[in-house]
Image (cartoon, rainbow, N blue to C red; front, side, top):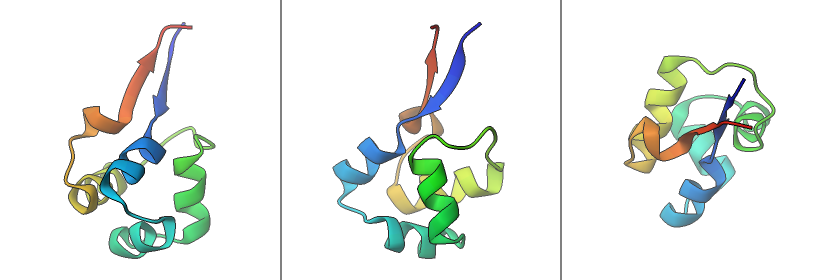
Length: 69
């Protein structure tokens, strides 16, 4: 069975946005944003995902990827 992985770090690099700035814009702690960025989460709230997409001017599909392995 495959899994969903986050490529938030790539989008943050493309948009030149740092972890602390993104966490502040989304309204979550730096620790939680770091966990999301480093794929250390099993779930993400839609409100958090929406905040990330708004801050980075992207779509969910830009940061959520399906890995078949």
